[in-house]
Length: 314
Image (cartoon, rainbow, N blue to C red; front, side, top):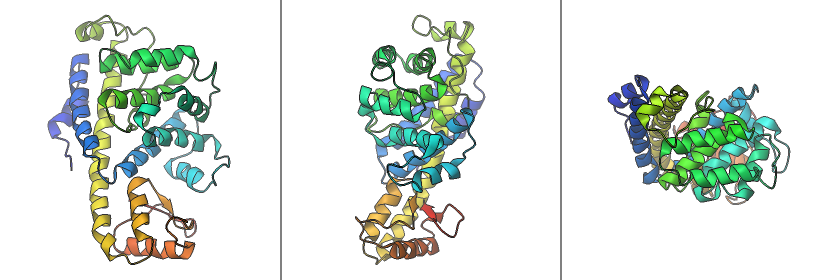
């Protein structure tokens, strides 16, 4: 487990200058990078839990009322192909970020779908030639600061807003750091992008940027990035402990298909107990009995609070 040192938490919250924020963000991302590269068995559940938090924040910023529980329902209780509503589509966009290979996230085909999930219609093929060209240039930008601020500036300039900017920034970061999958980070930070209009990041040093118009916005973005990284590390520690418990009790499970259920619990945010799975060969009743057993063993939690359509996860 990765424990965040107290000095790093203080550094993030007490950053007074852009240089302070850049150093804190760099240290936080370095710690997060260590978590990602361990590639734990529960990494899929971790990323999808972060995706849920990002979707809930994005929904609030878009003026919607769905919280995490409502977004979970819109996704889990809707059959494939059915309309899961605007909130459910936002969750699909963030789940896509967490699940697809990082190298495929910024392709024209994938961005076309993502724009629709964020409530935009693709223009000129995908996001329009300007956005695609911006992303190609940002992927080779000299530094992470230029890349992150550029993602928000490009999204705003093309009328897609800061919520999509957060998604793009997370995708670019994963590609820059060589992660196999992106980790949803900035979407869960309210107002993380701010307004980046007028920020020129390619021709100034950090010290000059700190004094220049827009420097405070860049500093705020870096602090948000650092906070998001620390939040992700904290969640990894929490889910890691829960996953250890699940793996410890797994040999005690005698139900046919139990191994596949354990694998799914480690790779996704939640599972519905009332929906049998052909791959596991378990009926609805058998699945419910297995989850009751796992709850009794302290290996999973029931997250819905309902008596029907119950939802379980780490």
